[in-house]
Image 1: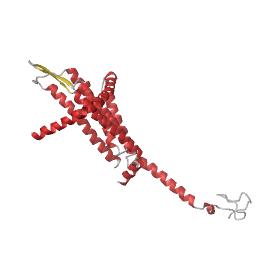
Image 2: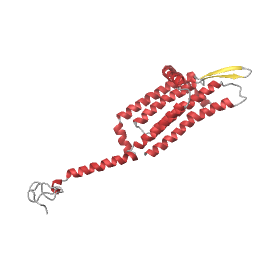
Image 3: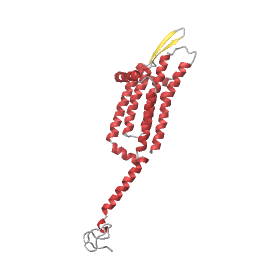
Image 4: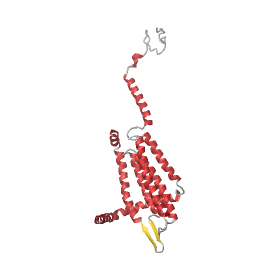
Amino acid sequence: MGAVKNMVKGFLFTGIYVVVSVVIPLVTFTLISDIEGIPFEWEQQDYNNITFWITALGLVMSGLAFFKYSSPKQSIRKGVFALIQVLVNCIYIWSYTFSGAAEITFVITGMGFFSLNLEAMILIYMGVYFLTIIIKIYDIIDFTVNREKIRENRMKE
Amino acid sequence: MDFLDILAEIVGSILLFLKPIVSPIGRWMVGWISTVTQFLKDNLSNGLTFYIVICAMLVISAMIVNSIWPGDKPGASFQKGVDKIDDFETKIEKIDGEDITEEIRRCKDCGNPLGDQEVCPLCGARQI
């Protein structure tokens, strides 16, 4: 695969990451905060925190996605950036709790309120993510040890 | 609907089974992630400039790396240099294989190497 093809692939996946990790969450949170008549309140500070961290970490993830997906398959640089991306992804997911989105209090007008705590679910998800990190580390070791064989196979394609 | 109920129960039981193993790992993960996020909150929460710069740097550096080394062969700009080196090495190999001593101009009288000179520096004989 040539340099141009690699970069096209990189830009494609960067676009997907921007849409999935920045645009869709931002639109969702904006819609929730903008809709009038819905019987719950969203504190402005929570909204500001969420939008800031989603944009900030989403941008970093998109940049890393470009580096990862534009790298040749089974290359060491792909492995390294895949690992960094997983780590940043963990921080991104955790930033939802950090900004208050994992423990949302819905105030129902005239009735009271109820609280939705997603922290336990995120805890299990983080445990699963740890296994992903282990796999990524194994990938880097594998790509490094079998570097010559992988390169030969890639040249044959 | 029965199928969905069964599926939900299976997923639920798997999660319950994994919870004692996965949750402590998750708690450890949350430990270091909280530290990092706290650091980000304390030091890098003023504006998006830092994150935009990081994103741009990643994209630009990836483009440079890809143009130099796309993976299957050296990139276009790098290839020119490699081709020049290959040509040079081929020439050297050719020269190494040939006997160039026969091509050297020598004095007709004494056999001394002459170079471009018309008179032999050793015996003084004129080369006509």
